[in-house]
Image (cartoon, rainbow, N blue to C red; front, side):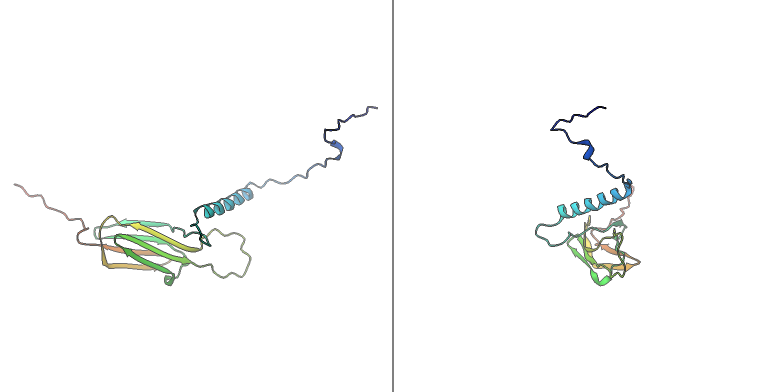
Length: 161
């Protein structure tokens, strides 16, 4: 029979309990990481002294035609009364709010943004301030900003000398 001699500084092996095996769930860890990352980004980019999250920027497409600039913004579930469209010189500013809807059940996952949004774009030419239209249809805000006569491209005919 052999006796085990243990040094006074070494941990006692007989008193350590084996850890229970846990199932590894990589998608759960990835989701937790994503949520922590979003919170970090919100804190870093929030304006100093503001009480809430900073305004977010909706997805947009900008198209230029011969006579106008057309801006399409994705704003699902936004009421047209909650949107403001302004033209400041040649900068188009669209602001508003996506309100949290009332829910009856428990929210298990939330990835859609809520709160204030702000979209700004500087138009590359002079706009006709009297001819601006904004329409909201199926969650897409379409703003058509007509070009002023000075901003429109003119075709110049080349003549023979």
